[in-house]
Amino acid sequence: MTRQLCAENATPEYIAMADLQLSGISKRFGDVQAVSDLSLDIQSGEFIVLLGPSGAGKTTTLRLVAGLETPEAGAIHIGGREVTALAPALRDVTFVFQQYSLYPHLSVFDNLAFPLRSPLRPVAEPEIKRKVLEVARMLRIEDKLQNPATRLSGGQMQRVAIGRALVRSPAIYLMDEPLSSLDAKLRNDLRLELKRIQQDLGATMLYVTHDQTEALTMATRVGVLEQGRLVQLGTPRQIYEDPVSSYVASRLGAPRINLVPRSALGVLAAPERAVTAGIRSEHVGLAKKVISAFATGASHTSTDAHDADLSAKVLRVERLSDQYLVHVALANSSQELICAPALNMLLEPGDTVYLHIKNMFWFDASGQRIRF
Ligand code: ATP
Image 1 (spheres, rainbow, N blue to C red):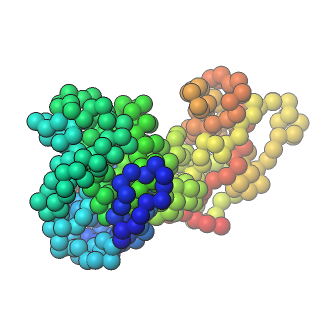
Image 2 (cartoon, rainbow, N blue to C red):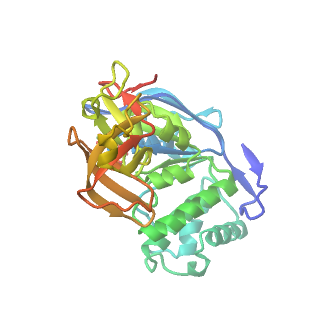
């Protein structure tokens, strides 16, 4: 599909974008089932982030869409056209890799112009110049256009690599951890720019990252992969607030969700098959324990899974720039938890605290969520 851009500051006048369907895709390498019966329906203009630990099948999924791998089963459609057996060059996708791959002997301008000079899609030189300048402006590298590609900082090189994808206006952008080799500040800047550019272009993006800030801030939907299977697809908020399993719950959230054996939580009411509780740090309220209040029976008592009261000892306190984290050990089980209390709470290692768990998930023996 081709549409005219509406956004005022959007650059190329016409952009191509398309929806993408993966239907029952499988890919095996020897004994390793890298991708397993994966179906994914991406709407035109969506920003989909694939999350999962190393080896979950993220890169293989991108490579299958790009045509760099061939699936043993399933079909891939881009813009309604089946491309499963089509050569990469005929799929109208661009791929940005984690490690920028620029032509060192070419200038930044010629690196950016390179995809437009492909014999498959000839573009007139004045149009090439216009597009390169537009993209260079978007990525704030217009003053580097005459530099040799080798005379750039790492961040500038990665901008050029991303720019090479943007000049083409393909049907689908595939990005494999494009920001992971950059330092924290550059990564932050480029993350915001990339999201702005994607929105301005209305581009369809399939993006792989390990970085949950990128997933939370950029994705329209997040797909969580586990051993080649897509185990949940939803908005970042759905994935965070309503995970289908302990595995999914562990993918988003810093610090990582506390996974606590049921037995460590004492008499807490729980569903029958519950084996593990998932407790996010911000869902634990802390109060300094007042011994006399407990002695007179004024302490809270647990009534159900969402109103659990427990006492614990403070092990460590971390004051980060935007977070206050308190590591505690439960009094009756020594189980450790990370809690994020109010910033103004003054706690020291050794303090006894009272925990109030405001919300939690229950998981069964296989890690699947139990709803009740
Ligand atoms: P990472 O985050 O480390 O890049 P990933 O989620 O992208 O991991 P993939 O690179 O897709 O994972 O790999 C999935 C599985 O397939 C892994 O077990 C990997 O070792 C295997 N694999 C991928 N490519 C090949 C290949 N060309 N030959 C053999 N095995 C491969």
